[in-house]
Structures are given as structure tokens and as C-alpha cells.
Length: 375
Image (cartoon, rainbow, N blue to C red):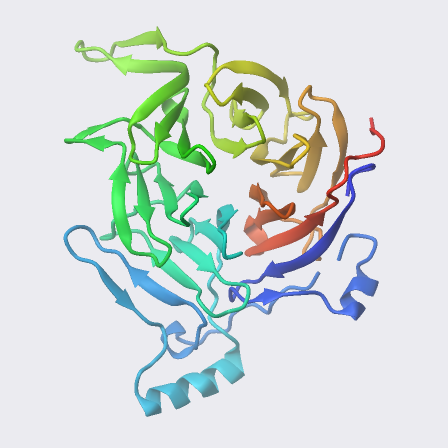
């Protein structure tokens, strides 16, 4: 971890969606990198024969809705699945995790662009499921994900220009951003929920806007600049609609009293209060070849930024002063391959979508304030 910011590797959700903690041998082997292990690559066995702990929710385009299990129902099918699982391992569930959050049941909710799907993962392995997206289904391209105080799941779909809401069991509830055929959003990506006040924040990159809505989808406020198409083909009119400027916001994190927005194609952090007033910001790119993929905030207001190319996580104060960093490119615990979305839960556990390693890593952050800064 960063100097003055203590933390410890807790475990990971691997490719088969099972939560694993490191053994003492693995901790000893990798103590200098914060620890690791990776599940074996899937073998060339038809996936329908390989058992999975994760059931699938098939949410088709309206009006259909059906749920199907991955497990075979017949005795013969179960035996074949058992033998295939022993020989080839469990089915690969996580392919390229993008964004992550948690709910009050300690379940980890992950969007995965490569399946595509929204995975709801129970660390106990008792109630995990995936809401499948893609062709013919309600969600086309899952991106940002958030959870409200009742554990309802909100999923941003930039392809559909909407936010879809599911209950805690994966049943569709409603669509936000679609008003009688007219869409509020163009391509929403990052979303976050202020659970205490019941406010949903949505980053719409192409419109350079962050919206604040209630949980029914009614717009309360917005910040940024929006492009509106005029009636004349090929022309656009630019309107200032907030107290500050945003450039293609892509991810959002909720702090204690502020909203942290990653924008400018992952090169800048903007800090906004809960009334959508811009109050600060700083650059987060130090090399031309690197850019940020995700952002999170801990209970001290320190801002965590994941870097795609250097595969590290840097920690900043709200004024942009860097406290330090951790991580490097690799497959072991505490190492990353294209880290993207992050989330820090109420217990101050940092969840990192380690995208190209097909896993989600968990770190326990030190609840005490850092003792010293690092340049």
C-alpha cells in the first residue's frame, strides 16, 4: 500500500466466481507484492457440461422475462456435469469485469462487458447469479453499477442510453432515463447512489454532464455542459447548464460529503458537492501513455485512482497531493492487469475490478488516518 496508507489483501473472486482467501504459503510467497494465485485457464470442454455455482437470469426484451439455472436437472445430466467439473474445473464466469459495487448482504455486484452480464456474487457461494445482457436481452452493454439502500441494483447501459433497475433477486423493476420515447441520457457510463439521501448520480460522457436524479428517475439537478442538437442538420448548440465544466465524465464515486468524478478521458478528477456545485479538481495523469480507469473514495475523503497501463492504484488527497501508490502489472495478489472500476464499502474494503486478470480483488484499508504524506 501507499506510505502512510495501510492495507492488506483479503482475497479475490476468481474466474469461476468463487471467493478465495490466500493460504499462509501464498502470503509468504507474495508478501512483497501483497500476495496471489490465479485459477487455471478453462479447458476445451463444452461449457454446458461444466457445473457452475452461478445461476443465470435471462432478462429478455419486453415483455418476456425468464430465469434459468446452469445446473442440469436430470440425474444423468448431473453425473456428466460432475465428471466434467472434476476434469476441467468450474465454468469460467468472470471474463472482463468493468465496474463493481457491494450491497448490505456483502454481495459483490460486477458488470462484465465480455459476457456480457451483471454478476451478483455471494462470497459464501449461496446466492450468486448473473443477469445476462447482449443481443435480444433488455440490457445491451452493462457499464456502471450501483446499489440503493434496499439493495436494488442499478445498471447503466450506454448502448441503450438508459439505467435499468433490478431488485435484490435479479427481477426487473423499471427503466430510468426513458420518458415516452425521449431519452434523458445519451451514453451513461459511471453511476453512484447516495444511499442516505436517495439520490442517483449519472455520468453521461457525450453530453459532458453529471445528472442528479431521485430513485424514480426524476431529474433534480445537473452539472456540466450539454450539447443539444438543433433542428438544422449537422449543427449543435452548446448550453451551460451547471456551475462548472466537465469533459466526458466516465466514472463517479460517492464520498462523505462530496462526489468525485473521473473525466477528460481518464486524465482528470473533478470534485462536486451533493448539490452539484463544482468545488475542486486536479490532473491524475503523469505520463502521456497512461490514463485512469476508475475512481473510489475512502472514509477520510482520500481518492483512489486506478491506472490502466501502469496497473497501479494511486491515492490522493482532495487537493490533488499524492499520498502514494500500490500495485504493478502481474498475476499475483496485489498485482493487476488493466484495473478498472473500484468501490470502497462501509467496512473500508477496497474492491478492484482487475479486468484483464478476470477477477475482483479485495483489500482491507486501515480505518485510521494516514500518519504521513508521501511525495
